[in-house]
Image (tube, rainbow, N blue to C red; front, side):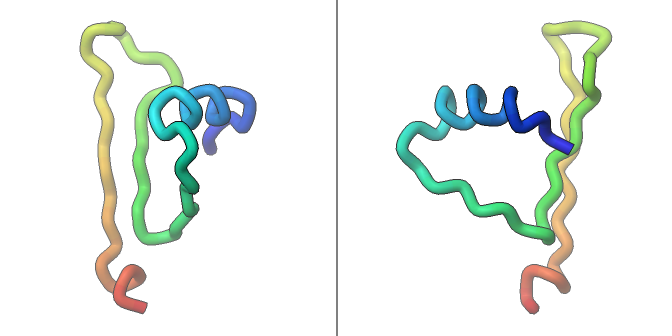
Length: 53
């Protein structure tokens, strides 16, 4: 789960003045703390069946 306090800062920094819609078919996952700040593993999951309704 995204930290609501941190998400508001990230959202304003990367998506200023844009509406962000939460969806169930797309998931972005990353570790809470990466071993290296230079390399942070991030995975994207997409559920096509859920996206198509």
